[in-house]
Image (cartoon, rainbow, N blue to C red):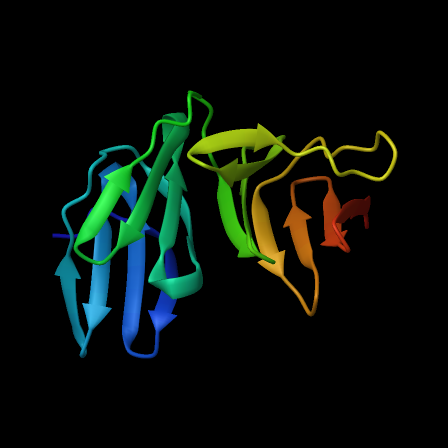
Length: 154
């Protein structure tokens, strides 16, 4: 049975991926849900369907899973932090904890540094893609990433 879903994304029309608690990864294809074999059992908090069907899934205790239906691989990004959000934008993959934004590159988390001045978010939980920009939303902060620069909105 299903333990609990936390996020869902569309890989292509009629191909949906969902993930959740205890490492659950599910695929819906041709109207049928199928449980996938997951390489981790951490609670999974967010996913992003990227170019060429690659999906990045993040979760508690530094959990990162990258892959496609039937082919999932855990990546050790050398952190025990709970990863809350992930988003593909302009050829980059962004990941956040509750208070930090990173870029995922070559299997590593790189601390994001492209902020206007020294103004960095204190909270960050989710990413939302807009028209030509991306937003990072936290409990008390909203930032916009546009033209390779993060600026405070709220």
